[in-house]
Image (cartoon, rainbow over the protein chains, first blue to last red):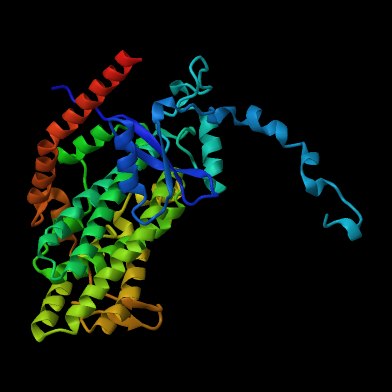
Length: 95
Length: 334
């Protein structure tokens, strides 16, 4: 029988309530239930998480690393978007 | 770790096509990033040789973790107490986990898990020479934790800062867990050393057998390690084989003393001028012999992996069939 490789799932773990899910790796699994089960065994053996997201890797879209300049550089010269741009009198600078 | 499947949206072509692989401008940009200590991520352009080196190193590392489950797994059913058994189960499970973190990291470089497994099972891929030595008694399990995992930690800590992001992040996770491995091993040996004379002899015997193979884990001398220079240049390797080996010897002498065992090397002594311990020459013939497949357990280890893979074939197939059937039912019901 022709071998079919199990699909790849990207795994995201919320380490505790109040924090975002964070990417931690991937697993192979044939369905969603197995992906969660395997992710639990591989990535949370020491209570590293309280919640797991598993996403089929083929369903993720990502920006092209080479598009970095046009995507992100336009924000570079907009320093007025940061609070530190504004020099206020010392007496009120901690507002 | 992100994978080759992490694609840009359909209809949008990546700017750099495969024909850009040898592009000098990209190469210069890559070199500059390496020099600046920047991290290379999965989808970034990288020279083919860098990619190949990483695939080889990360997959060999993963194979070592997987094969590394065997020598200790051998003792799970014969652990001397429930406590030691629970600890050993957790440790062996960790080794499996480490293998999986690393396979996932290797897959981000565009190789399939199956092709990596196939390379291991066919004998094409190498794994660490240390796992081709037998575990003869319970003390071996403790010594593996103390010396073998101790050497692995020395090797692996610098990899947490290697230039390839997915590998570095996997190694951070691995290193956190390795510390438990080393400490549980030393703890098991301490227990034996406070036991009978016979138990102490078993520990000493295991140390005698594992000491030199542990030193060999750091690989050939720098002068005989032709690829090391390039790996250093690429930020994959941060500290040379000989320097890591020296660090390991320096750290271990005191631990042996506290434990009450002798390291099997008459030439081992503190060198005030160097600020390091001197130690005897390593038997590299033995090392190459084991690497080239003639160690005591090479045939057994591989046969075990092949059997596990073959015996599991029906499970892999059944899981796929089940998932397909469920998907078809859901589609029909929709």
